Image (cartoon, rainbow, N blue to C red; front, side, top):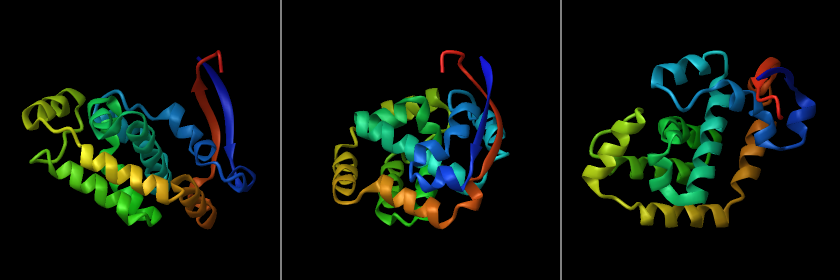
Length: 170
C-alpha cells in the first residue's frame, strides 16, 4: 500500500463523474468488516458523500447480479445508506425499491454478512420483481446523471483533500 494525495474540488465535480467524486471513500471505507468498522470509517465523511457511496455500490451490485447478489455480498452492509441516499438525491423510486426489498426479510436486513445470508436462507427470496423494477428505473432514468446533478447542485459536502492508502499497483 502507498499513500496517494486526493483532492476533490470544483474541478473534479465539474467533470460530473460520481465515481471520481467519491474516490476517497472507496479507499478509506471498509465494507467487508463489521458495522462498527464501517461507521468508524465513515465518520470523516459527509452524509452526502456517504449517500452517493452507498447508492453507487448498490447500483453496481444490482446491475451485476440483482438484489440477491447485493444482499449476499459484503456490499449489503450499505443497504440502509443506499435507501436513504436515493431519498436524499431525490430518486424516490430507488428508495422505494430498496425499502420494499428490505421488508421481505421480516426484520431489517442484518448489517453482518453471515447473519444477512442466514436471513436470506430463511426467506428463500429471489427478488426478481425488485430487480425488474430497478432495471426499469435504470432504463428510464439516467441514474448516474441524476447523481451528478445532485453533486453539482450541492458541491461543498463532497470536497475532500488528503491522503489515502491505495494498492501500490494503482
